[in-house]
Image 1 (tube, rainbow, N blue to C red):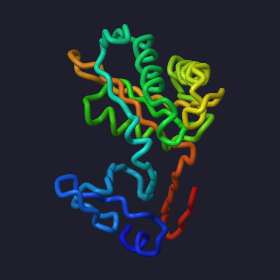
Image 2: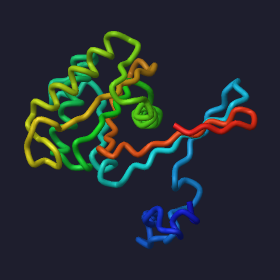
Image 3: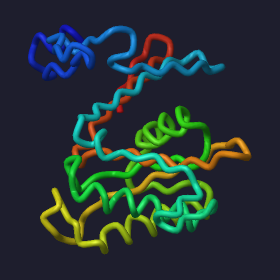
Image 4: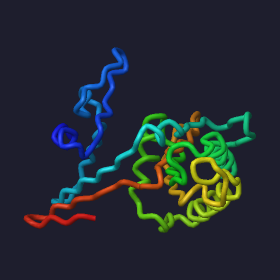
Length: 200
């Protein structure tokens, strides 16, 4: 990361929140950039990279259902209401048109993580669960009917796609997290199998 920043492949974005100082190399302690490890039974090594800027991070939202402010209950109809509320509140910020990553369930932390991880899936593909696949399509269509458009200037394309994942939750909690990804959809994947390396 530091070398890529030094060569100007990446702009320096690590700012100490306490002292308001940019480190200049994109490294900021143990948690910036954020790296998530997941152990698997496979002998393969997969590394996935997602570059999200502050603009799309700023318009992400998390809801705890029920949410009386938008009349959202603890069901998929409630999920629909809060996701469309997040799109309305974003008003084209975050480098719109964007892609929505939605996690239903989990705790506050896991819900946010999974709402970002679901953005690794390919655009245009649908969730294997038919209920969630239908909701993905409906949310994309209804978000585009809001007329917010690219960068909030109006138009028919506010959202390019919607990706949804579901998690188990505690009985007392029903979180819905919405992560936003800008139109550039900057992602790469590297897989190492034995001595062979492939890129997607």
